[in-house]
Structures are given as C-alpha cells and as structure tokens.
Image (cartoon, rainbow, N blue to C red; front, top):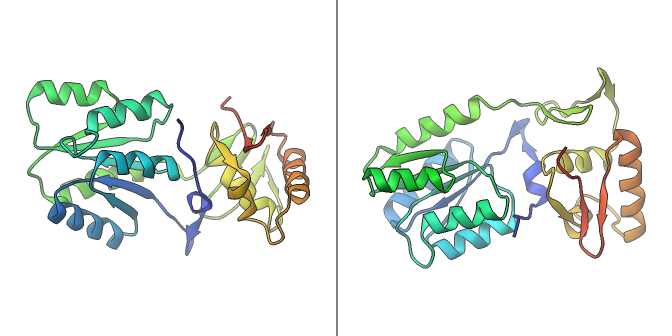
Length: 228
C-alpha cells in the first residue's frame, strides 16, 4: 500500500526545508553514526534495524530519501524496495551494502535503487551523495498553474501572488507535497484550530476555488489530488 504522510512533511523550520530520511541499518555502530551525522547536518533521520520496521515507517509518513542496508533481519532491502515500488512509492533510495559483486549491484538497481554505496565507506561519502542529490532539487513545487516555494511560503498562479490564510496555506503546502497520495482527515484536522467535518469540507472547497485543483473526496478516508 502507498505510504501515508503527516503534517511534518510540509513543514519548514527557520525557513529551511526539512528533509526526512529513513535509514535501515542493523549495524548499531554504523546506524548510530549515520543518524547522528545526518541530524547534525539538519536532516531529520529516522533509524530502524529491520526490514519490517522500515516498511511500517514508510507507511507512517512520506520520506524524501531511503537509505537501506540489504542483509537485514525480517525483510531484506531488495524485497523491501520491490514492495515499496509495487505500492507506487518511488522515494529515491540509496543502498549501502557489503554485497559488492556485480550481481548484487545489478539487482539493487533493477528493483529500483537510485544509488549503491559499497561497504566499508566513510560516512562523509554518504553525506556528500545526499547533499549532491538535494542541492540539485528545485525548491519550487508546482501543480497545474499553481507554484509554491516551501522556503518563502509564496504561492503564485499564472504569475500573480496569491494571499492565503492561516488554514489555506498549510493545506496547500501539504497537498502539493503529496500529489497522488490520500491525506487522511486526521492529517488535515491537525492543521485546523477547530477541526470538524463541516469545517474541513468548507476549507477544502475554498482551496479548490482558490487553486482550481480537483481535490477528490475518498469516502471514509480523506482527500487526494491525482497526478496529472
């Protein structure tokens, strides 16, 4: 099943985009080292030690990057990535593994990895690859004729700046970061000062009018915007 998301996915801290990383590593020393290094550099890194916990974590929220070891307990990295891709979770993935033969590397890329780092490696080498990846990412998010900057919080439509209120702006930020994913009512309630079903419907209708987006009601679950 596709990964869920939380309000944290669309938030920024001190004007800086928060990048969420899921680390799967059963080597306790290496896992702790990588997690501490990434958190110190301003990333938000969650560390788990087996494949089943990684699958659960990937379902809980939307991550910007997966870093997965392969030979881990309960569900290996290859099977994990394959199941995520089958669930239409295309989050960029870096494998870190002591499996250095060409067959393993080939399998890693065939199941959907974006990079493959052979153990042993210097943690700083992993950091350089991560920073290179995100430095190339555009900071402007778009859907239809709406563009949104997570850094400046500016919303534009056809070249004109839109002024959105305290509810509309977080709603827009959350939806545009999760096109193609269903947002539960609970996720959306967290953005509201006085949440209720009626207030939520009103807020969604207002956002639809402001943006021109087709926001679909997934009965009994929440709302989603399909990919174009």
